[in-house]
Length: 439
Image (cartoon, helix red, strand yellow):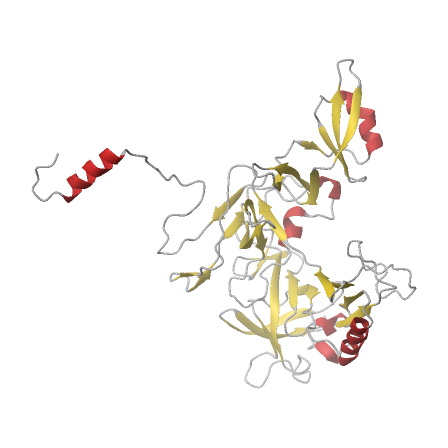
């Protein structure tokens, strides 16, 4: 995103920095509704990414340091949220306010000369009266419709039944289409007419961390753990160790990546899936603003060599005859080939039972070799591919309250003894004996 401004720091406090944005000539630069370029998205609630000037990087304390990254905690980017903006953010082109405090307040320490390169603006959570009236009309007519969101103008819009694509994945290609050809798949909320009322579906983005064998996860969202040493509520977390390589590079991560555990998958039948947990960005200062919303992109880089960025699951049937999706270890699925035609050409090089995933065709096939050495490919529908990364070295931390020192995880050893009734009675008599004569 082209913003072409830099940050000027005025004051700094705990978890807070004030200042203003400046142009290349160090003149205060207006932001928010006072401008009509990308700076208009710099408003309270926005999240911004900063990079260091050429030849510099950020230290663990977010200070500018000349040269390349060398120490633990050094980094190339910082995220910070906009907490407050005074009018146009320039104090009428004077920069600092009369008391020396800057007109823009950030939730993180950002040094002078840091360069903003990306903006994530907050959603407008209010529906205009015009949109509300259109929703009422669609409901009264008992027709399918959807709600989309225009991030550039910060407003919601109606997708009518003739324009809405009900089943396709999210896409902005035909956003706000009025051709009545059911092309618009940009809906975030979908309303489908039913016999009584509407069925409402909303899109969301969730991140999951799974373990094939070594780890089982336990989440208790009803218990909050307060750490007196840190003076804050702490969450269970996954730490992706910096011994992992950067995506597509044979070079270690510059820093570990910490993800908060926010929930656990519960199947429709009530079964708690302890193979995986839902994770999200960390928020160490509890201000509801992400410390780093780019954690998935930084570790997986899904848009770079996307055919290599798959993790796989298999549908299994448990002893209760219920279906479960279980993660598979790396190497079980061969995903080196994009199409079925490519797999046909090399299938004789692999043993019977090999499972292939043709990533361009999005199809799984199993190779069967009979006694006559004839190789056959059969489609399999019990596998699923998701965007992600496997073979991750990580640390899992579950925090238990003082009243529950035994962690209910499979890694703990709990001994259970079965004794006879006679032994139980004799043992109780021994424990309750006050004479010292019962042996």
